[in-house]
Length: 188
Picture (tube, rainbow, N blue to C red):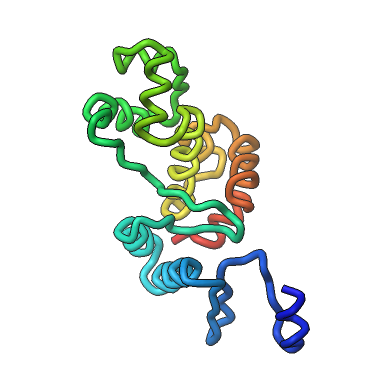
């Protein structure tokens, strides 16, 4: 960063962002950030639904903050465990507002808690808690983009965070932004 700034003193470099949109000038930090920038342009021209659809087809996140680790919004279960865990995973996605203790999930899957945890992680690549958190964040982001009349408190509850404070904490920690700022940037 320092060497670029020294070589080009008239240019302001922000290493914390993936892309910059200054109206007639758009720049990205690299090839993956170029895809992020393209999704930003699609979102601006055609809306969040179109950008999300393109992101799903490219198997990339619909939005990443600078420095954020990449994630796939809805990982597909591996075939061998997907048959057994697939219906449970769909139920988990449909029931994000409910508490989902491992004991209940294991019982629904017909497995011991230990076997369930091991197979769930082998199937999704994530622990149950991490998977639920990512799904709750994904759901909250979708609502913030599409449901502009729904309050942040209601989104926190329907996404399974329980309170706005908890949702705000996870947005800051995982996405580097607040729910309000996210809605302002990406809301329809």
